Length: 400
Ligand code: NDP
Image 1 (tube, rainbow, N blue to C red):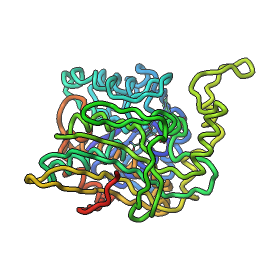
Image 2: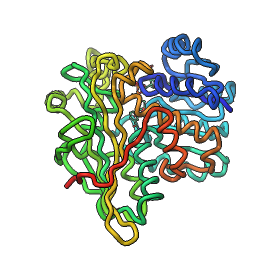
Image 3: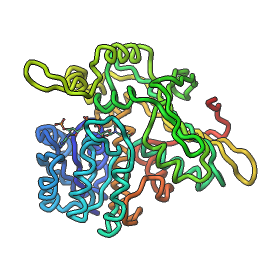
């Protein structure tokens, strides 16, 4: 069918690459291009003997638009799948524009020096992508990603209007370390140490970090503490889903994680302000990343399950209705299949599916779009087929 260039070769990319290689009919060729080429070569060595997908590798600095343009022009992919870091979104979008290549990512742009994610920078590219006749699919991971597809599916099939959405992200996995993050530590800690926020009646309501706590009994996992966080899909879902009055995002954290985080925060280790150390500027959070376990190595030791989904409350045929859509994913099963834990798996699978939707022309409109702006049905089918089956509950316990 076509060729995909995957930028980045970390935890999420590794899963997406395994999945592309399982799906050779669509992904005839992939190029893995990242900062550290040896990681790309190691994956190629593992996967090329067992896949029909033709794998190429390259070194690229994705902060450099010219380098990206040159590489895209030499490989001529149908789609670029950005699985590097949010800081690279705009340079990669610029290179896609210059080469008229479709673009897919899993996280919205964040400037390096302000831990604030919002879509305004990427939405500003709408007209340019439209004029160039290419698609940018934003947020094709799990959250954002599957949570948006779930919302579009609920809207299409279950509701006339959705008034309340609670997104619940539960990781019941245990890796045995006192403290480690399940995906890129820098991005993860920036996210959880920021102020919380949710949208109510069209306005953002801000909370202190971890101020709002609830307890929820997750199917497949059990009872967990969860905390309200700011999350990027709130911004787009509040615009794209009809009738929204309130939308919130909760993530589970264990007490040990929070105690370590507090301590690291109190001593200044989570700061993104550069400091001078032995004559050289360092960013404390980047240094912390260097001493923490690499999330890519957690797979073998993580046991338990994740349960991520959305509880919807709204109206159908004039009556109140509640509906919960979720996926349960087992860390060890993911590890057996692709050598990664479930947090990378639940992001990497939808990333592959998003690229597939664009490559096959199943989703085909020029411009910059969030995932809930496309027909959810083919994506929902693909989730069942490619390892993230979803479950429905028509009488869920609600979050107060
Ligand atoms: P990792 O840190 O494991 O991987 C990032 C990769 O990008 C690394 O291979 C890194 O190279 C490469 N990279 C970083 N900077 C550059 C650069 N300038 N040029 C080229 N390559 C670069 O991160 P994850 O795999 O955990 O996360 C990947 C993305 O997925 C992030 O944007 C994250 O926010 C997003 N994500 C989204 C989720 C969702 O549900 N939507 C959930 C989890 C993550 P090197 O190997 O040299 O370090």
